Length: 137
Image 1 (cartoon, one colour):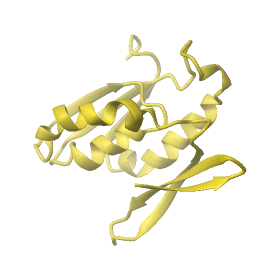
Image 2: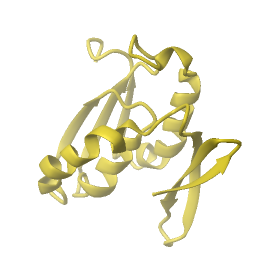
Image 3: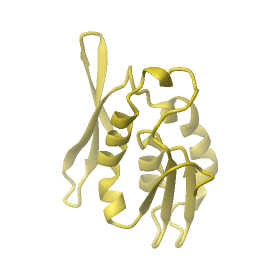
Image 4: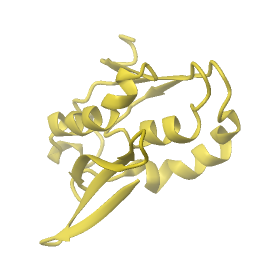
């Protein structure tokens, strides 16, 4: 879940989570112009079509190569990996790549956004973060 505010031509997105009591809590803020939500733009429809059938099943383990700011991570853990003992492993270098647009990104900030929005999932044992290449994993 997220809310957006426009400031000086930029859209700042505040990422929200519902806590155990049902209250909304802000977990991270990002400038969507600098750190776009590529998951929603390109992949969410495919995830909905192909992965929701696994929702609620026990013991499901998913591996995600490339986690960026955690948009797909949060979506998977909120909507698919909801069964007992379901786990997601995220593998990313958080150092960018030669993809267009990456040269202007601060990947330290990208990782901080990921860490802040996934801390609760990692502490609950539902998410394993592996910082490194897919080959090193």
